[in-house]
Length: 136
Ligand SMILES: [Zn+2]
Image (cartoon, rainbow, N blue to C red; front, side, top):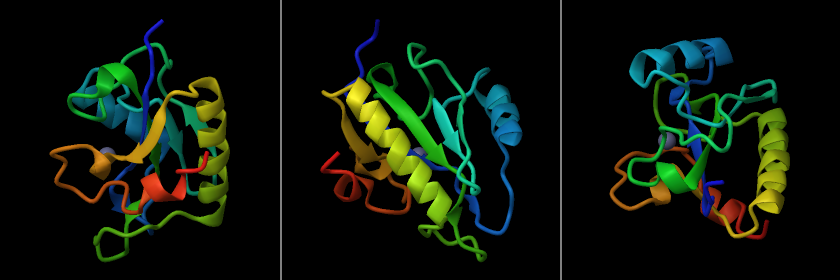
C-alpha cells in the first residue's frame, strides 16, 4: 500500500462552455502519459468517474505524485479562456462528497489545490481549495 498524505484538486483548464468528457480526458492523457493522470474526474453534470486506481501513482502534481491522489473537475476557464471558478452546483456537491469520503479513507491527508504546491505557476484549480476544504 502506498501512503497518501496529499489530495490535490485540479481543473481540466477547459472552457466552461465547452464539454471535456471523461473519454476525451482519458484519450488525451493516454497520449501524454500512457495512462490517466488523475484518480477522479468530475464532469459539469456532477458525475464522478474514478479514472485511476488509488494505489497506482498518478501524473498530476510534479514531485508529489507518489504520495498523492489527484481529483480534477471539468472546467476552470470562463468563456474567454480566463482562469475562473466555473464549478457548477452539481460539481461542487459531488466534489465535496468525494473529498469527504477520501478524507475519511485517508485521514492523514491534506487537501489542497494544485497551485498551493511549491513552484506551481498556474492558477489550477482556479479557486482556494485549501481554505474551502480545510475543515474536512
Ligand atoms: Zn492542476
